[in-house]
Length: 423
Image (cartoon, rainbow, N blue to C red; front, side, top):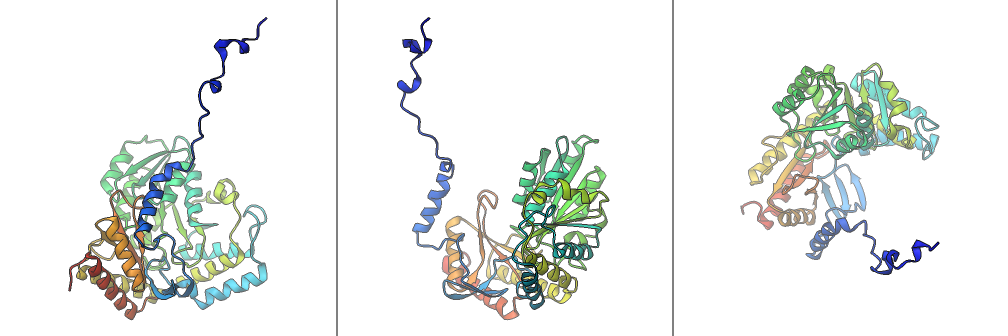
């Protein structure tokens, strides 16, 4: 019998066609690479590769050899250099070493992790608290674990990337509603099966524009439709509400929120994430949440600094008052100079200075940096298509004199680039 593989009709395609070249998996980013290179070719510094050579305080650093005011960090309450916080971290580093080398469910729970969770329970006045290695992992883990196939996650269209990634890691149906629209939330919830499990995910403060959610109205709508509620207070913890718990406290809806997620990398001044809850079954999350079970726990020095900071934030009324004064003053001052801002009034510690296009955004950002002021430059995809802005994040440690200097720097830079009128 003749071997069919030897017949002329079965010649391998590779003998006729040239060998295909495998696709470069990074080629999908060629457009972005070219855009970034074109930007750098104009002589500007890379806005996304700033190196702080030395950090002098929560509000000052050395960048390119120059003393620079920091207006682009999330150090809202200025806790990074608090003497008690730093001392707690040094003590834990000496006593417990540099790291845990294990997961929380294995060898990675030290006394400090429990003390940090105790501090969170006391701060939020809730029964349960779970600490994650980052705020990103907190959203990733909690959202993906709560909602499974057949459940629905209803989220604001402007939600943070960690919230979206938590949705994608799980297997639930995702429903988006228009940013901060109570009516659209109500309409979309009304279309869902009554018997289905539903989680509405909200943020107290939205990080790009610094606007706050109408939590009172949204919580009422969610409860009307039988949905559970998760509120991300990453940018609200520390200075909203009587006790600094967040926008949900200030809105008076604490008893109706099922889960509060937050981070240590902003007002707390270190790194890590958490979720607090009064749900009687919440502790089971320690056994079923993958980003908690399958990652190393925070180093002892980190949870020690977090616990010390959280306990001090319970009594930080003066800091909160000064931060709000800074926010209102900077917002009004920028408006008076002629800048267009993302919110009509100061709604949080974030003030977004809207820009007409990328070229002007970059030029103004560099003009500020060259004059000793660092802010964040934001562009798509971090912002909606066609939206460019400079994001200012105020700190409770900014002095009145620094706010005066910040406004003077914005005046000089904006006039130099033509964003605002000449004096």
